[in-house]
Every structure is written in structure tokens, then in C-alpha cells.
Length: 381
Image (cartoon, rainbow, N blue to C red; front, top):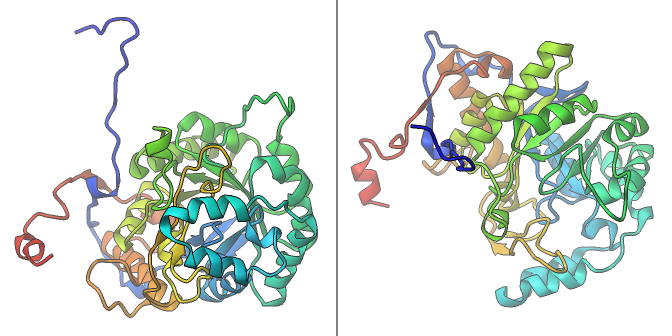
């Protein structure tokens, strides 16, 4: 049947709970798997990046995350570049009543950024022996990213709710030219977020080294509710991976894909990699660690927007250590701990010794995967 002109066709889109990974025809021991990944020579031992959120990453957490083998991205538009000492600010945010939290956040984030602190924070991470990855919104990246690079930053992330190569603005007719930024900073540049093939391909053509995938899936983000935008993470990752692979076939240059947001369990991590992701970026699970700076509180990057807050402060509580989250041992059966171990075991079951080999894992649409045969577990929930 031919649709009337102008009628939209809505294709299905899938999230983590809709799909399952099919075991492989051969298996390998989990201790034979290699879960390392890299961004144009910047390597990490485990494919985990801590989100550029003030509730997750400060300089101390960045060092501890590096010690664990991953990398934590520090928000250079946040508290740490507005205040020399952030301890009191964190205490105030943790103590304020929930109904007053967004107003307080808007107030503390109204203080101007001090460019001097951009380089200082990088130096503090490096002096602690950590890898320094730093994040900027497009509006500040052109001015401040070179400051971070000059101070020794290992990676620059340019991040917004939605990033495109083509952006129109009355205030800045030229805008941020990513190719120029890549040349200026001289370190791997990761940009995001996006969820589409065409934007991913255009961003790759700008010379960036990694692309963040995800619009609105994070626990502290309400972009999907407030703005109505987003694509479930499985479909979004697969679409962006298809663009990455097409670009690689054309040029021979590999651009890493990072699934960012909405990941709750080891199973979600495994499904992201099976979709083709080279790493995952996680926020709320890290915010619940003993090492996170906000005492179990969590808020999104856009919470403090002065005219349209798109997030909220949530109380996750301090529930476990960074070691337990990444490497176990796990004291629960819900998949929320020992994320690295879960990835290694899953890779073993599909017969993948590397993350690239895991990209070839077969997946199926399986919305009953979490409930099939689990009547007694569900009854006890």
C-alpha cells in the first residue's frame, strides 16, 4: 500500500532490554581475552570512560580511574574551572533539599569559568600519575581546549546534547571547525553526541578520533522527556558503527565509537561492544562509588541551564568501591558489579579474544530475554 505524501514511516528502534547476544560456534577462556582499546595511539587497558560530569569526576577520581586501567573525563565547563576549592560546593549540593537542587545548581554554575584553572586541573591529574582527558562544550572548546593541551592533556572531548559538523549560529557565523581544533590541540579528539549515520560520517571526515553515541539515555538526563529527542542505544550504536565502518573502508582510518549513557549492567556493556562500540562511557554507576566526589549525588551536564534545565539531581547513594564496580567480586546477581569480568566472560562465550572480534557477535531481537523462565526470580523481586 502506498503511503500518502508526507506521511512519516516509523522504523523500530531497539534498546538494551530488547536484544540478546547469541553464543558463538567456539569459545575461549575469559583470561585469554584482551579488552584494551585506543584512540589514535592513546590506549587504555579497559574500555571504560567515566562521564564528564562533576558528580562523577574530579582530579582524584581521574587518577584512580587511570590506575584501574580506564580513563575519566573531567568537565572543564563545570565546578572545577569555576572554583579553586570545590569541597564546600559539593557539600552544599549534597545537603540541599531535592526541590531546591536545580535552583542551587543554576546558582553555583553562574560563576564565570577561570581559564587559569583549565591547565591547573590537567597538571593535578598528571602529577597524580593519571591520564588527563578533558571535556568542553563547543562554545568553549576553541578557546580553552588548547590551554588543556598545552598543560599536558591526553585527550580532548567536545561534547553537547547533540553535535553536528554543520551548525548555524547568529553569534558565531563560522562556529567551531573540528578539523582546525584537531590540528590545534595535537592530541586525540573525541566528539559527541550523535545517533545517526550521516552525522557520524561527517564528523569522522573532520579528522576526529572518536565519536560519542547517545542522546538522552542517561539516568540524570531528561532530554527525551523535555525535548522529545533520542534513539535507543542499541539502534543508535549500530547506525553510527555502520558509518564508522563505511568511512574506514573508504579511507583506512579507524574512528572509535563510544556508547555513552544508559548502561546499567555488564550485559549492557557487552551488548554495546557487540553492536560495534570500542568503549563505553558511564555516569551513574561511577557516581555511586566511594571514590566519586559528590557523596552519591548525581546530576547531568545540562541541569544548570539558565532557561531550560534538562536534568535533575538524583540521590543514588554510595553503594560500592570503584574496584568492585569494575573488577568485583560481585555481591549481587543483577549484573551491576564486575563489569570488566562480565565483558571478558561474554567475549569468551562468543569466541572473541579482542573487542574488534566481539564486534562480529550475532544479536537477536529478544524482548523476553530477561523474563523467560524467571518466574521465581520475578516473584521474589
